[in-house]
Length: 99
Image (cartoon, rainbow, N blue to C red; front, side, top):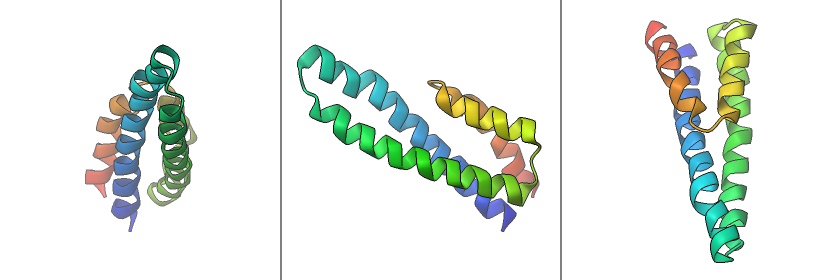
């Protein structure tokens, strides 16, 4: 059960990270440089849903794996920084393999 929640959190973290990168480096330039605002609406909505799911799974994994508040905060803040979730992936993977 613990391994399952951490695994799901890690997977959605990677997907959410990719959606953030696509939003920033593909959809935003399409909106502002090519005049195609629909790209941000579509990718932004998908990213928003993934981020909410990420937050829910973060709390679930935090409870199941009994992470410290500091680690949980680091994982959350990393999700706000472009490429941040990719840097924390290795740490999350150690928790996934530990249990």
